[in-house]
Length: 282
Ligand SMILES: [Zn+2]
Ligand SMILES: [Zn+2]
Image 1 (cartoon, helix red, strand yellow):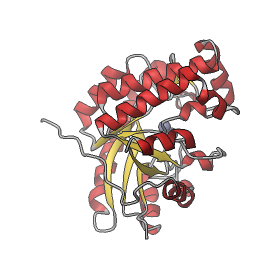
Image 2 (cartoon, rainbow, N blue to C red):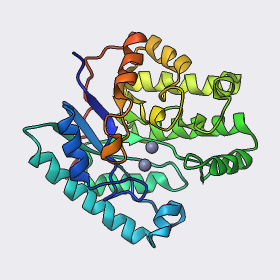
Image 3 (spheres, rainbow, N blue to C red):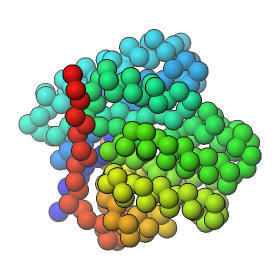
Image 4 (cartoon, rainbow, N blue to C red):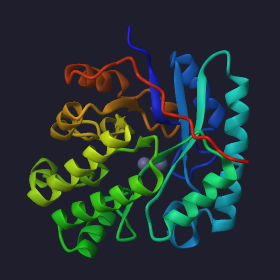
């Protein structure tokens, strides 16, 4: 029997404006479903210019976002101990890659000592692209075309990987999210070359790919990483581990069985290694 794990999970309504439920309820649901280990990977606190619309709607500013993030770490560490007999919890966070992220991520790492980072890109040229098709079109326009946007995304992802060597690379090809012809776009030679280059870098650095099954819950035909890239990742010997990217109790474990079946079919080892925990100097 294959262990249920999640390298990228545990967003909650308590600490994220587009998720639901208290973090403890989310953790309890992982326990109920028999997960062996998980990482809580809340989104980093964003600076004012990059707060999400739903955060602005809550009247948030960056000071409040930071304060909430501080509480996230306290609560996540409390749950890590409180549930230690039931489940192995790591306390991580998910990055952004907007202008100025390098300084902000470094400061948050220094302050909160996460167990690891999920390196994710949700902005291209500072335009957030994943929340809605309208945002996506804005990002395409800013980049000067669909393939150009994918290229910018993968260039930014490489920069993030080189800057932080995140133990887990989040939803590798999220950039395809609102592209109905993504299989085609990924085959564009300029796009493919960059995606392949990033996978080679991930292999060299021995980072883990988040096999993000939330894609299925959001109506995508397949998880991130899509099939041709997954095949290349396998050839390169990259480790792929499932992430449910849960955003509330209802999405804990959603798509996990289908995702694990895809990984087995593609020949990946299901003896999932845990991400390396960062060493912090005090
Ligand atoms: Zn989220
Ligand atoms: Zn994400």
